[in-house]
Length: 104
Image (tube, rainbow, N blue to C red; front, side, top):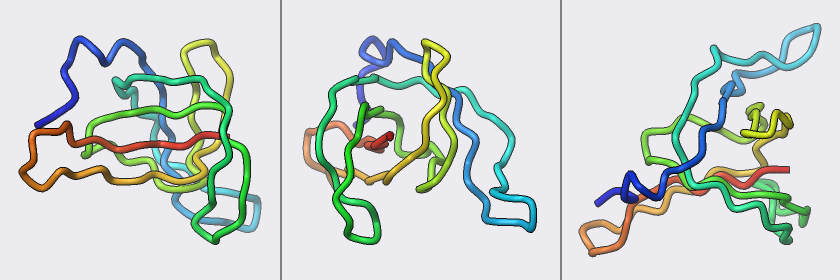
């Protein structure tokens, strides 16, 4: 089960992080994704275990590609970085499957 389309009111542009080069980070082609964007500041943990602050969270389809360190442009034009992307797969339960994308 997916998040209902009528809740996916926002559009974000994701440039997936692909690694580092001698000139800095490498990103994939930008992809516009539908999501529900919650702009609430909260404390979260990075994949490395450090505590940091997330200024917003996007809830998107599970097939969205947004690994940590990806660049994301929000609907207001602000550019931010993915702290962590967490799969929320209900494994058959009647709850919506989604990708929780925590943003700086």
